[in-house]
Image (cartoon, rainbow, N blue to C red):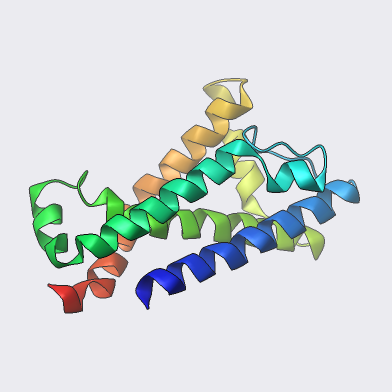
Length: 159
């Protein structure tokens, strides 16, 4: 049940992300901030290799997390790096949800802090890839304790 729910949420959020991104791009309301996504057409947006590779890692993480669910507490106690297989799916869902919320806010004419947050890393580099990677690394660091608590609740009945 848990893997199916995680995959369903990812599929729904990814679809919403692609739809809202394409709407914003086609209406000229925004530009794609993610340098890893090819936004020249809807089909290239859907088939961009980096997001699809991350979806593959998501599926692998969900599979491994289910396989080792009974060892969740041992993985966390041993090393937080071992807990990444449990946390990556949750982080992926969080990041895509942030993108959908940001896109939806722009469509509705509301302000969104995500592009401003990403651009705040212009001091580090002019390269958009570095800016977005740094921004999402900061989101990872801030969200890590929350994601760990959610994972503990999700896998509590297996330990």
